Image: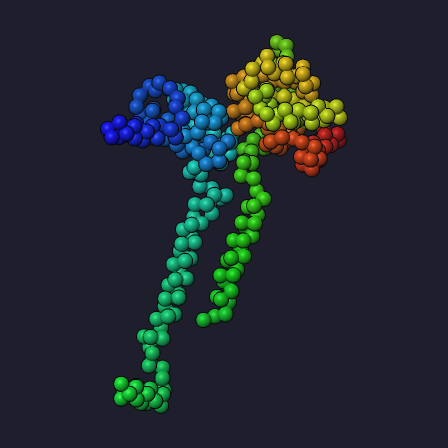
Length: 158
Length: 178
């Protein structure tokens, strides 16, 4: 039993390691390491569709990681590094694309759709409610009399 | 309730259907290149054959194909006979031997014939990185001034050449002639 447990624990601990590519880089300080992690998480591997370059084992992702490490060592800012990648690989490499005229729909499209849905919902709800609220308000006196009679009849039935 | 509201769900459905139908025929592996319209990146790298150092200036003067290849790349082997044929027809092709072992590259050129006018030895992949290469084969079309005008990702076969690249290349050639 204990052996099985140990095996399970070991197996689970491996699972965490399995999805991150392993490189050995020596960083100057923790801040630089942190920036390296942020950048490799934010940049997308051009070869592998939907993996960031931190996760990917594709050769191109390894090259880009090395390039990021090199540029960090040269004291480049995060923006400079991202610009370097976008210059070569296009907006595709960014998981957070810059806000431009072309990406406007991407950023605000979901919000606009949600807002549209809320408006449609509000209109429908209002329309349904209206007849209930002024149900008897716009009846003529004759109609009201008829309604009262009908209701009375209903009650005597019971 | 207005009548047109009843048609709205159908309209939305049709709109989504059009987008999804279009999506069926898009290849997500094909990225739009960020390099179109930019000059060929500057480089200074040795040639695959001989000791000569090549720079971007060596690619100027005539429109050409710049083909990124490697002996490790299986599809490049499929592409190679087509390049040979194009070279025979007089198409100017430059090679970028991308992240490769030079001895293997030399053997490849000897065994399969060499369609390249010049072959740049990019062992570290630095030029490939500057070109935004993310695999091989990739083929760039550059004009006489060394501006990148088109990029094709994947194997250039006869169909691709005939239907996509030939006209573009001819257009660049015609540009040079006044």
